[in-house]
Length: 271
Image (tube, rainbow, N blue to C red; front, side, top):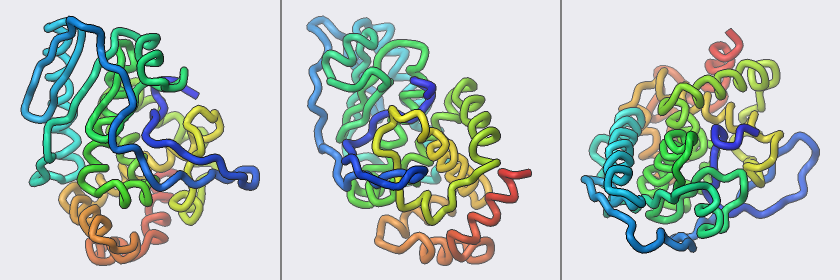
């Protein structure tokens, strides 16, 4: 697994015994607040329209604040959430390195970032841009959809996060494009399995095919159906519609069921 290019920790999952080749389902809930320790005394805080960023220097806090707003703008435009306004600014904590991040958050060695409630936890390093885009997408998706819906639609939650991570930097884009070409296109996961199952742990090397696929599918929906329609699709799902019902109501001229999306997506991915 590409440690910092693969999706990062979003929620705690229960280990479930499944047949070889399947992916176990996630637990339904995510903690509302993060059980983490903050930065050492002397840190600096920069506040912007949508974020309160903490880092160990004023210049770093200002830089990451600007990067947060840049990512936020792109995510909102891509997902069509133009009118959505977060209830309060998101808190972003930038630890000085991986060692401090792991010691103060308790996250696994492979984790490059985490989203909990209203907080985004990251650390300085080459993978920060990818981690920020991925986890920020979770924050927005979770708040817009509500935690219950976000958890029940984990394939879409992770899919848009992977898509936005790929959009944020060239390294992630190249990695996921390569995984789609080498692992997904030759052996796609049937959508009936993809939407109902999810990896028990993102540290498992054999689950990156699922992440690459859901990222590809989410990107396909955004590109082919348009950002505005994608926001309507999310809204129908948030209101309790099934995936097929939401597709039929929003994309009736293109897709009426997820099976229709699967057929169209396969034509693109295998091209």
